Image (tube, rainbow, N blue to C red; front, side, top):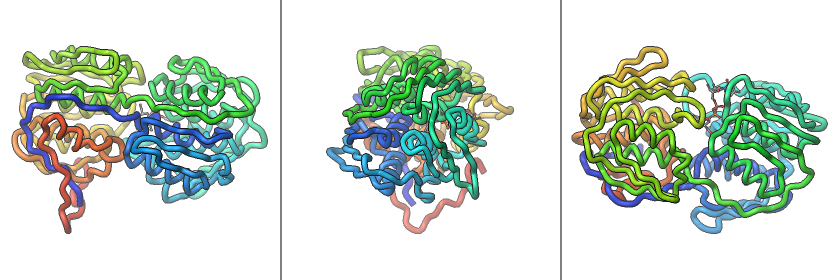
Length: 429
Ligand code: UD1
């Protein structure tokens, strides 16, 4: 089994470069299906979720060519298959975007119920309801989702709850539908805007992405495009917190500072210095850090995908902080792992009560999900002694070369193969 082995205590200093956004890439890759010509995608992150997305496209009949490390030419014009291979779909949560993209292109799709991080109940009812508004009939048989329509017509979609995935899927399905689709109570995350920008660069007519009302006027054809994926807001935020947790001084490059505002605001409250540049943020500390409370909410609120990382930082400051999770039911699985490292955290429903002790100790721990894994890396970097993290495949789903990038700014982290060892601990156990 591969593990990350970290010797904590090094101050992180220097420049680190952020890759393209996972959550934009995993929607834009299926969106290429909608194009009537080949597309070139740039700034594609090298992570396993992207490899799976590209493999799904190739297995469905698209030609996928790597131009360089982060650039792909994808020709999905001959693709006739609207079924996503079962084994692939269940490996990745975002395989549900193939539903919207195939429905938009072929009027039908078959995708098995998606996998991904174990964050609690992850329904797709709102995705399916939005397809229904556009004229699709949906059913789920033996874990496989079938969507099909005779014709897609624009419609009025109102989401009861803000959902990134349902908003993206509604856009994908409506972009070629007849007439106007209005999506209300839409999610506003940067990757929603990125998907809309990508589709608009192919000739789509999408207005209002980034606000809670998105209007999509269906078009008949979408042309090819060359498009660069937006920088990853969560990867950037993770390195900001790693810099703060090690009392380092790091310039995080290839970012859009506007996308980081809620993270920056919290870090400043904790006593971290953050300076914004055009496409970089510098993060450093000059004084002791202080406790604060954090509550996750949809964009532009504090992202749930940064909750484990900021909670880890708060274990390293003196005094009690409250971290409230409002999006996912099971997003505190990492807490038990942090306790192994000496953290004093109590969970009360949706709230983690963190009694910061200013210190963590290295320990063997397990990455229970993607962001939990990122949080444990931060903990290991800041801790006294050695931390061994297992199940790092979760981390590799969403962070490109995280160990290499962190070594570049002074971290003592190595990926090591431990022959004969298999995962024995269960998460949070
Ligand atoms: C996306 C992100 C994930 C992030 C999450 C919230 C991707 C690939 N993943 O996940 O990293 O943690 O946004 O910012 O972009 N819900 C329903 N019915 C639905 C859909 C969602 O009730 O049909 C609920 C969910 O249970 C959850 C909330 O809505 O409580 C938000 O989920 P959603 O925004 O859809 O998350 P994802 O798109 O799956």
